[in-house]
Length: 353
Ligand SMILES: [Zn+2]
Ligand SMILES: [Zn+2]
Image (cartoon, rainbow, N blue to C red; front, side, top):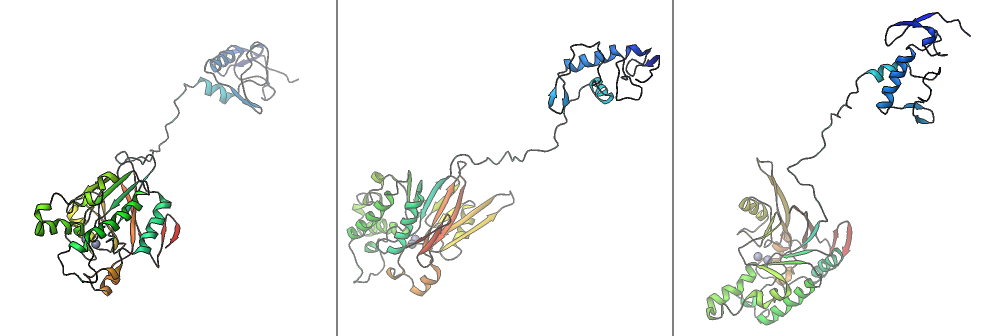
């Protein structure tokens, strides 16, 4: 038992008081708590009012205030008393801004799958390439299908000279085209769009020149039963708007740079057919926008065409098709699917034709 002085100055009220006015402490050299009993009681009441607890090895515990006048060893330390007396400050706000760009809406919901079917030139399609495209599509299950034009060749009504061994009647061609359309219908896409190309336009030009009286009687959309099949029709030289993507057969250009020329014409996202080539280009502008111009090859048989040297066609034309994933915002993320030796890869999966 240590000897205690007769009086001690309270660290809180700074009044000199008899040592009997202080709780004992085995941790301090003086053997007494620094604050007098009334001051300590007041401090502990303040703690209780503020809902504060003291930590203990077994977890947080409430301060036992049941007998304030009894001496206790485990009462508040000086630091705890000062902390309790200090006015409580709000927790500092973290100096981190959330990574949100408010003008770009975040993608929500599932992406819509868009299958883009380029020039097929039925009945001169490449059967193996067509079946490979269908095989991918049956597996991939597109929500939307877009035919980019020149789906039928319309050789029978072409104004060009025709090879006698190649002439077919229009009804033969139309029957073949309807077979292929029925196969696309079998994919059960919820939206279907048919864009007419210059080859579909051959029929209108033929009627205009040779049988204008029949002009309103013979229509591509009727011959292909597009309305009853649920296909929406876009006439030649017009474009379809799908979300933020424009699609048309051609903008009056052919060749390897037709897609960049179309990008210049539209000043917006644009997919074209007609060239039978496969290429994608991106172009930004001073406003910080970026637009895409794309062409997705073809599905025709190079041996079936007679309007281009076969070597030239083999060099520039590419078998394949296109796909897109559309966000709810209308942004369509495009990807070409080229066929190499009648094999192609879609979403990391290899398909062989
Ligand atoms: Zn064309
Ligand atoms: Zn074509």
